[in-house]
Length: 444
Image (cartoon, rainbow, N blue to C red; front, side, top):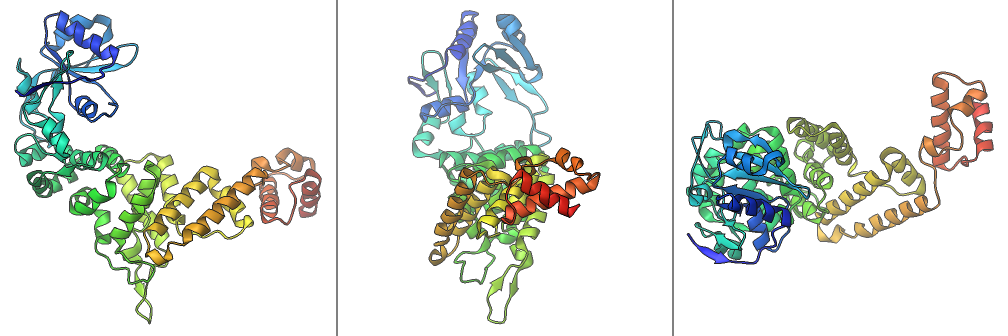
């Protein structure tokens, strides 16, 4: 086993976990992603420990701090004041019947056997308290070269656990690593296994992938792999837009827009979805120019189907869907700004502008001057907010009780309030209590 001494900044509570296991006579190591990220100079999100201690021995070492979260697979969660440490016994995995989970595991005293069951060389490293890195599969060399390589036979790895297919692409998108050729070939060979994946896991992995700095380049390189789990993207690939505003096909336009969007999950999903309806809506005019009337509505319909299948929560589905449907909507005036604030609220309106910026950056270069127009709209938005413009019923200077006092009742109260708000947003009526009551009296 290749060993190298490094100085990793292991948090105190994790060091205490390792120390307690070693003091009890067991081997114990930080393992997997926390070692990888530490060697890259990144802050690990989680710290996992692998140990020679059997689950019941780990439970005995930590007493009330230990929670048996997965005894069948050797996992005990050690709860410390500063955080939780998932602690798992060295093991060998048995056969994978569902392309996701081993039917059985066998505990082993051998660290190398435990590392051999892991997905990629960069995740198959462990380090002890003294900073000694155990690296039997060349993970440090692959880290230095920026390469993702499966441990052992890549087809077997992906066939055993299909989630590794998306994990590979996600790591490439987040870390900017290239995928070793044999591993890349196996991604293609095994891609249809993604159809058997739990939709929640596909959703989770794709979200992390989309938010990665290199998401667009990974999607560009592996559309057929992504398309096995998300077939709705495939009609966009290579679809010629036949429009002077667009120098790219629909898929390449989407990737350029994705690259230009901030790495926010709502924005990135909305950008991925925003032109999915274009192939369905495509029509040529008499001059041979392509148009996509109503593609925002169609894109939302397709996006809603994807989000239902991948189990998005209702709030995210509604928010992303509205952004997709309205992504092409132009605003020109202060009245339009107030109307959009009424519909979307400030946060989502700014998200819509961010999507429009990204969308514009995916167009032909000579048409990217719309960035200045979006700057103008955002400046107008800032001014409307600074001067306290009214764009919601909550801000209106009268309320339902005021209208009840005028003798209005039932549905007429709501209709009248909305009518007053419409006039205020349009600038034909001031948001002044007396003026609003006078106008309401005339409506009555």
